[in-house]
Structures are given as structure tokens and as C-alpha cells.
Amino acid sequence: MTIETSAGNPVDSAAERNRKLGLRINEEVWNNQRFDLIPELFTEDFVADYSPRVVRQGRDQIEQMVRSSHATFEGFKETIRHVVADEHSVVLHFTISGRQVGDWGSVAATNLPVKYDEVVIMQIRDGKVCRQVGVLDSLLALQQLGRIPDPGGYVEKSFADGA
Image (cartoon, rainbow, N blue to C red; front, top):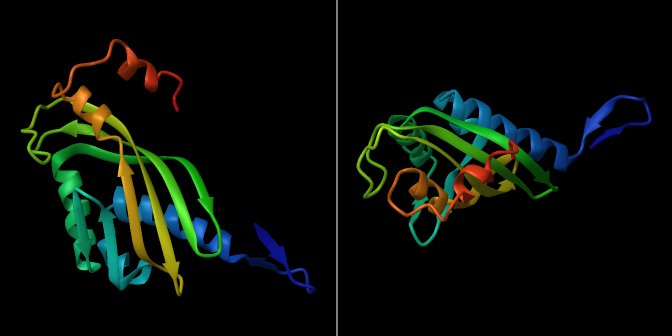
């Protein structure tokens, strides 16, 4: 939401600034690997919480997470589906896609394409992300990588409408 001042000049609301921050992180850091922007976009005490699987602390972990994703999934890309923001946070729902060419946890490289969703809730402090809680659809990814049986057409149907 953009608000206009009495002089008619547009002023971004906190929610709009947070929305832009989330989209910028997605495109510039995760998709384009712009690691030089990390200090500008994340607090020094940043926490990435993907409990119970992993919790990472410190913004130095962000570059490692991004590099690992790109090394594991050739053509790694996050495509935004939904964005919701308020004055304290931004929620991103996106689809991750790529070809698994590296080990992903205990899953050895399969060279198979994968496409699954993730939702992250980013808490904002002083214009930077200080905490991120993420939930990803590992079940769908593991089905596509042949580690869990396909439940009969659900995997193909889930992305048939482009959602």
C-alpha cells in the first residue's frame, strides 16, 4: 500500500517496504546469488528456523544456504506465488524448481527435476530480516525424487494449474 503525503508525494507504508524487502531477497539473493546485499537485508543476529530439521544463526549462514541450494539443484529458482506483508513481517509462498545434481540431506543425487513449495515468514527489525521461519513441502520433493511412492497422480496434478 502506498500512502500520499499532503504534498502529494508517495510514501511507502511499512507493509509495502516489507513486501519489497521480501521480493528483493527472493530475486536478488536467492535467485541471483547477490551475496554482497546480505548485510543490507539481514541483521547480524539473523536466525533461520526450519525446525526440527535445522536452525541456523547469523547472517553468514545465508550465503552458505544459497550456495548449497544452487549446488544441489541445477537451475535452482524460486518463483513467487503469494506475498503477504504487514508492518512487522512478510510471508512469501514460492515454488522451488531445479534438477537434483547434488546430495540433498540423505538423498543422493538423482539428476531428476523437482518442483515443490515453501512458505517463509520473515520478521523485520529496522528494515532488515532478523528471523525467518520456513516450512517446505519435503513430501512432494521426495516423491518427485523417487524416495517416497507417488500417491497416484497427486504429484502431477498439484502443479498442473500453474499454482
